Amino acid sequence: MKQQETLTHVYLMPGMAADSRIFENLNLPEDKYKIHPLEWEMPRVNESLEDYAKRMLNFVNHENSVLIGVSFGGVIVQEMARFLDLKRLIIISSVKCTEELPPRMKFASKTGLFKLIPTGLVDYVDYFEKVAIGDFLKKRARLYKQYISITDKHYLNWSIRNMVNWKCEKPDEKVIHVHGDKDEVFPIKNIRDVIVVEGGTHIMIINRFRWFNENLPSLIESGKLENKEKNKQVN
Image (cartoon, rainbow, N blue to C red):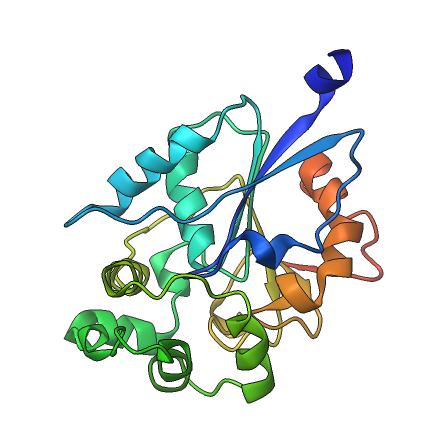
């Protein structure tokens, strides 16, 4: 019981349409941390992003916990954090505000072109990455598709709409942002105040899990990297 009271509870939110298996290789010291993978809930008709985030709060059962979100999951945890008192808020391969969205997403939002993405297709991931996002290497697309679990058209329409239309003028100063310098979806050139993983792509939570296993404990405890010689922190 005493050990349970000293544990830091870490909640993990996967990226769009993915399930918690993207965290399957993530390991944190079990004497200090308890991992709680989150899964996507189906959005209700016309549900706002804020209301969805409030609904996800039902799955966070510990005070002073840690929220970690990947890609669109990073947006979700930032919205959830507005209603929580957290130990740490960490986003991976994501954005902190509207300004960090790539120009093509801003254009899709302004023109409404995101509505034309055929989310009813089974292979929507390939289409979305190549047409709406830009070039996406086939090998990485195949790897990520192994973790896709949601093909519901309503969910996909809702997620894409809320991703490209996310309104956040000022980033949360407490957020810790980890980003790969080879991210194809959210290019590093648009990102500020970030910890850079050299060679990291948009799916680095899957294929660079060793970096996270090594560095997440220090990020959770201090918000900083211990070994700055091996890693970069860019303002």
